Structure formats: structure tokens, C-alpha cells
Image (cartoon, rainbow over all chains, first blue to last red; front, side, top):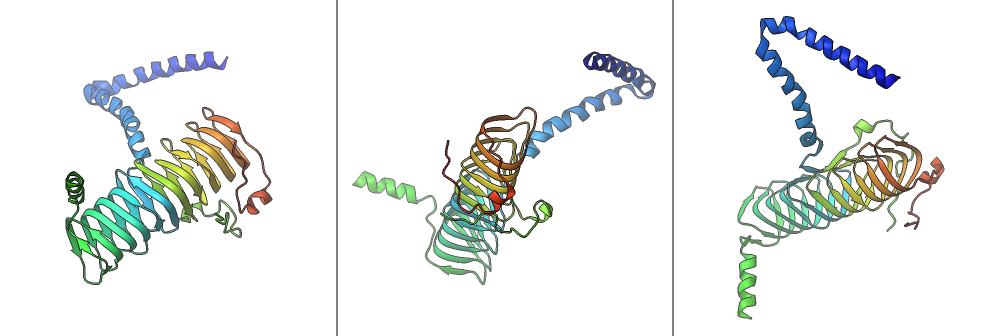
Length: 168
Length: 136
């Protein structure tokens, strides 16, 4: 019964909606018709993109033991014991990483015990880096701590290896 | 590995969920290993391993393979493994296979679930400090 009633109601509402726009349509016919389909289409298009953010945030209360990988950006405020690889990695002032951090861009304000391999590296004044930094472009602010080598060899390591393997 | 579960036993559950530090894994993120947090964790990407959180949300495109231990769990994505949680909700996009150890559970219409949902008293979760070997 309810299904039949619903069908009847749908018919009624469509009848009323078609009846109501006519006075409005007489004032401005095209803008009202143009706005309506947009209003219905926008939420449908917006939901999938807003439902899946591309940025990853590791909060100060989170500890990861293992590997963390992403093709997008990662912001770390917590603790990671293992390797991190992402397009852009931002390590917050209280964050701690034990392992290798790889990416196009790495901004370090926290502590890394391991290695950084990135095209562009920024060590801020609260950074504490224990280990080597392999970079192409590096910024070191006053106050940053580094215990290790800084080598501008990012992107060159693989051709070197290839040459060695060819020679050997 | 002995990671203490449900550390903050004094806090009444579900009380200040908004104050929990929120972590999220983006859609492109893949974690292999253990994720351990006192706060909330939202996963849009993939996790292969173990999750230990206060509140855990597996979003629609998310995927987890392994065990999840949390006070509150909401699943909207794909999960293959076990869940140990007081309160579990399966959303209408959930696709779960495995076991859900729960105290209260809600399953939305449209959710897919294959496996078992054993009920456990609250005391079971409070005494839980090592996961049982009940791999199905």
C-alpha cells in the first residue's frame, strides 16, 4: 500500500513543482531552470573528492612501526619507526622518525635518526638530523642540528650504480 | 609483541571523541606495519598490519588487512581480518570478511559481511592485553 501511495505522492509533488515554477518562470524563466540542475549536480560531484583526502596526517598520538608510503603528501607529528616515502614529507617539531625518509620534498622540524633522500630538503631551526642527507637543493636554518654527511647526490645515485654494474 | 590495549581505562568511552587527536591516512597512503594511537584514526588508504586506536574509522575507499583493536570502530570500506571493539558500526558501504568481536554492533542496510560476530562482555575488552590466536 505504501509503495502505491508513494507513487501517487511523487506524482502529486511533481505536479505541484511544475505548477509553482510557472509564476516564477514568468518573471525570469531561464535562470531558474539553469540554477536547479547545478544545485543537484554539485553535491554529487563534491562528495567523492571531499570523502577521500589525499594528505596523510600522523598526529602526535600515533606511532607507526613499519613502512609508510604515499604518492601524495604526508605530515608527521608523531613517531615512525620505519621508512617513509611520499611526494612531500613534512616532519613536525615533536615528531620522531627512525628510518629513511624519501621524497621530492622533505621539510624537517623534528628528529630523524636515519637518512633523508629528497630533491629539496629544508632543515628548520628545530630540526635534529642524525644521519646522512642526500639532496639536490638544501636549506639549513640557524639552529638546526646535523650529525652526518650532506651529499648533493639526489638522482645521481642510480646512474652511478648503473655505470659500476656496466664496468663490472 | 605486547602492546597494551585500552590503556586509558578510567575514561568513560565515547565521552570526548571530539578532543581525541585525529590522524588520517590519505587515499594514496599505504602502511605496512603497526599503527598505534591513543586518539582517532581515519583511513582512506590501505593498511596491511595491525591497528590499535581509541577510535577507528575505515572510510569508503579504505582497505585494511589485519587486526583492528579500538574502543569504537566504524567501517565504511573493505576489511579483511579481525576487529576487537566495544562498539562497532558497519556502514552501508562496508565490505568485511573475518571476525568482529564486539559488545554492541550496528550493521547498516547494504553492508556486506562474511564471517562471525562473537559477542563479548565489557570485561573481556578491558582484560584484553594480547590478541587471541583465532585466525579463521
